[in-house]
Length: 125
Image (cartoon, rainbow, N blue to C red; front, side, top):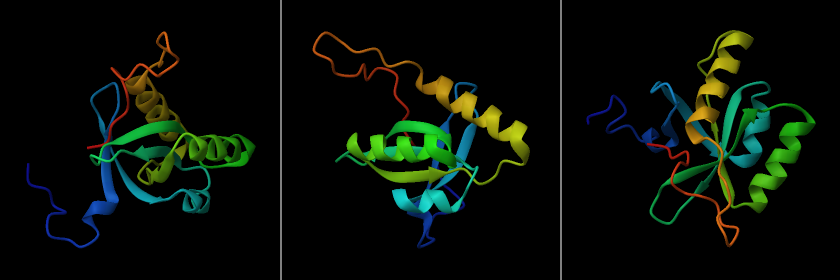
């Protein structure tokens, strides 16, 4: 599918994440440490797989101690990118976006040997 970003040098910095509702959320990818520069923005901390897939490790707001703790845990889990959703207006829209994105990923129950169930994981397009 053609994109308005085709041919633009920074196009690879943008990703869409799909919520449970089917709504797509445009994000811009940054190094993990840059997410704190957008306090209160919805953010997805993501691990990048060798095939280029991005897996959501944590979804929340980029502010406060909870975010600082999540950042450390996400790093330990292999996250290397922060995908910041900058197009929400107001607290209500931010909460709706977070709930929709989190619901798309759903719970990840451990299987017998403790690995995550990878059938429903957040993957960026």
